[in-house]
Length: 221
Image 1: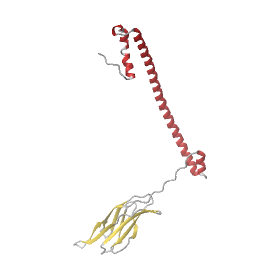
Image 2 (image 1 turned 90 degrees about the horizontal axis):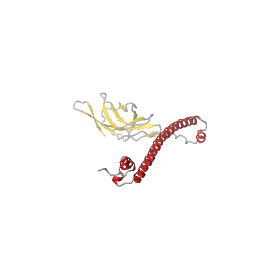
Image 3 (image 1 turned 180 degrees about the horizontal axis):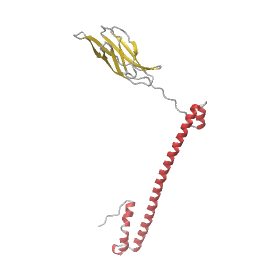
Image 4 (image 1 turned 45 degrees about the horizontal axis):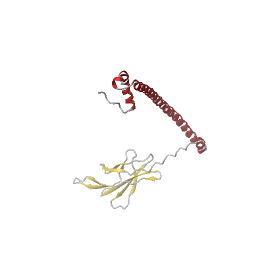
């Protein structure tokens, strides 16, 4: 027993195309008239013709859409190059705004100023054989940033400027710690022009002597 006619239009068309010839030949034996089968055959033909036309329209539309987008990309690329030329010309003109107004485009935004240097982090200290202390840290700042090192020794009430860290290695060696100092507290901040970033959390270096009389060091954040 054959399957029933699908409810989908396209599937129904294919299904009927597979049945109509048999229905025409066997009209009387399956309870149909020649008029019925002829009418259905004509409608199947018309539907197939309309379907073919729709498919052609879809194909043409797809090709036209692809062509449209391709042309639009070329148009925009050319226009972008021309706008870049206009902006470049405006930058050298005596009245840049007049150029932008005549062209009907928005003037280029001035570059945003870089923010202050970030807070230095991850401070560490190491003791040199000559009693010096090397402070290393991590920090980010725009070109032109210098890293200021300050120190407060035990008994002092405020930090005093020591110098500037090496920009490439982000480290500073303090060779001015005198013998007998118990602790030295270090702090770092980034400076660029008139902008000063937040100071690091202080790093405290504790000095002492082991049983052999050799200086040793401890650290406290």
